[in-house]
Amino acid sequence: KRVVVFISGGGSNMLALAKAAEAADFPAEIIAVISDKADAGGLAKAEALGIETFAFVRKDFASKDEHETAILEALDALSPDIICLAGYMRLLSGTFISRHEGRIINIHPSLLPLFPGLDTHRRAIEAGHATAGCSVHFVTEGMDEGPIILQTEVPVLAGDTPDALAARVLTVEHQTYPRALRLLAEDKVRMDGGKTVRVEG
Ligand code: GRF
Image (cartoon, rainbow, N blue to C red):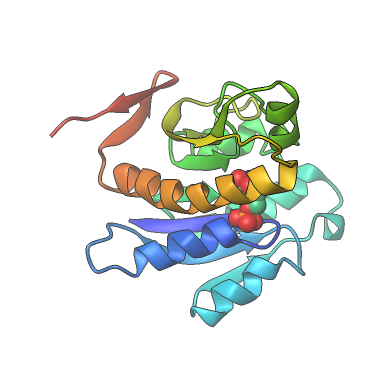
């Protein structure tokens, strides 16, 4: 399966996906990385792996719609089977999502539906939760609310700062995202009627 990864920053999750995809038995290939920031650190990491990169800088476009249209045109040429959002910090419009419904997944650093949005680790600590974690989910129009594919729990330790917890969760994200991508690329999961359906066998 052909995969395009969207980033806005360092791209550590993109790198984890690219590394996993190098395995001969991995059922997906990262064919391109798209960023909304020209200086995203992940672009250099992708290029170092020989992966084609594109930057669509929002301020270069008169509107959100024109920005998304440029990205959609690039995607039409790439014809991906799967789009992985990985630290992509921009909400996609319903128009965009409906063009690729069921093919867009995202990793979020919390145990959804807990803590959608930003600053998830500080919120988990302040709520006194004993576990935090990450979620890979199908992307739907609402933010961080699509059906879940995989979640992994991470303990919150006494005295954890948000940064310490974030680092512990990020390590687990790098294991969880490739596992979720494999499930989707092997057609072991799909989105049906707003729910994740696991296809047995
Ligand atoms: C990660 O915590 C990810 O869950 C969130 O963005 C953070 C940075 O991701 N979506 P990356 O290092 O750019 O992949």
